[in-house]
Structure formats: C-alpha cells, structure tokens
Image (cartoon, helix red, strand yellow):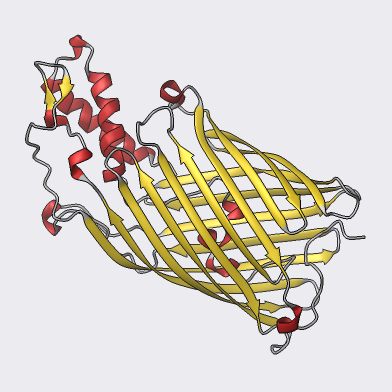
Length: 371
C-alpha cells in the first residue's frame, strides 16, 4: 500500500535537508533523496501494513470472517510469497505467509458452523533489515439465511514483533560532502530507544454471500484491522509522533459466474484505507476446464491497482491444489527507478473435505465444473 501523503512529506523534508547539505547545482540532491527514501522510508512507514496483490488468496489477512468461509471445501491450507524492488534495492522486500482454516460443527449446528484457523506472516524490508513477524489465531461464525445466502462474523487475535538493524540505515546527516557518498562513520542525530517492538493486535470483520443458483455466487465483506490501536515504535514517547497503529479498513466484493460448461468468470474488487493511505484493486480471472470434469484447470486474469500497477495473473489447478503467479507491472512514477518492474508473487492453496466430522453438506456454494 502506498502512502502518498507520507512520501510527499518525507521527500519535501529530505529536499530541504539535502539542499542545506549539498548545493542543488552539484546534481546530488535528487540522488540523495532517492537513496535516503529507499534506506529510511521503511523505518518511517512502519504503520503501513503488509499486503499481497493476490489478496483473494490470503483470506485470513483480508478479513477474519473468512475463517472457515470456504465455499467449495471443509478446510484449506495455503502459502503466499511476495518479492519486490528486486532491481532497486540490494536487499529486496520479501513477504511470506502460511495459513490454515477449517469448518467445524456443521452436523451439530442448525444450518450454521464455526470456523477456526491461524496465519503466520514474515516480512523483511530493505537494507535496514526491518523484519516483521506476526502470528494470529482466528475464529468465525457462519449462519445460513434461507437456502441462498450466508452471513459471517469473525475476529482474530495475534502477536506481532518488529525489529530493525540501525547500523544498516543511512540518514541525511551522514552524507559526506567531501566524498559525495554516505559515511556510516559519521554520527547521526537519529537515536533509537529499542531495536525491537512487540504488541497485541486485534481484527474484526463480517461477510455476506449470495448464491441463488449453481451458476452464480456473490460475496462481499468488510473488516477493521488494529481495532486496539497498538503502539509500534522504535523510539521513545518524546518524539512527538503518534506511534499507535492506525485502524485499517478493508472492503471487498467478488463474484463467480459460470458462463459455459468450460468457463467460470471471477470478477472482483478490493479497497483498503489506513492513515490516509488507500489502495484500490479491480479486475478478475477465469477458470478454464481442461479435462471436462474440473480436475485440470487453467487460470488467467488481470488486475489494476489504481495509479500504481497492472497485475497479470497465471495459474493452474489440479484437483484441489491451486498454484497462481502474479507480476506487478509498475505504472506509477516509481517506474522511473525500477524500469516498470514491480513485485513477483506466488500462491499455493489446497482444499479438502472431512465429511466424517462435518456430516453431509452441499458440494459447493459457488459454481464448479462437476457434471
């Protein structure tokens, strides 16, 4: 997620600082600003959450009400991996997550069930080795409303840790005018109170699904992250900045439409807002049946993140295992520095059934190729 307001303020501050350090006429100013933003921006943007372009394949980080909300299975496990700024930074940003969730008590509750799950996230960002580790446990309740709709509500509770190596960071007051380079040996006025921070984190969310026929499925959800506004900082309280995590609001809508015996269309949209930073993604993908029974499927699609990137997707599904790849093609001003090359992302999901625990159930709430 891009926070343009923070970036613009940071760049303006760095512009004034570097103009004092090195005359603009020497041509160093833009170079210094760019380098410092790359080195220091992750430090000042710690209040911005991790995100995946394939948000639809990271259900528990999108909305805790997705826990156990599995239209075509009883349980699922998955992993996600994202790497970005490979050709800009010597240490690219890398994000990894692993999750699992399941439906319980389908044969004990009246047209309802519980969802339980968990997710682990790990992220390493930039030369300062800004590392995030987050572990969440999720719980949700799902109630069918009649025969064609479902209402869900859930929450998750987790522990988060962030650490940083200040020795690997460069600051504006460490620029050596004589050599024209940054010098880590020059003392900096930036003082860290700690290189580790830990906090408790809470998210809540709701979902609604509508499935009037075997050929149509519509789902929409809303979630609020960091409800408890935890403190996240490496500095003392005397900095004058609000170091509490801002609440993050996420809304999404998606549909699954069976347009023929061989093609299922999946349009979708996603919006997120946190501390003035917003992200809007829209697009879709198709599932194409290669085998006539849904065992082998080819997936392809394209998405657009507003004012930031075009995101093509390609994938393959064998039985209940799905693999998808996306590549962010940068369309923003950042393309000047990364030549349009954005993030590479991979997702691997597996769904399954355990009817001996859940009892009989409808095969799927969404369209399938089973004939």
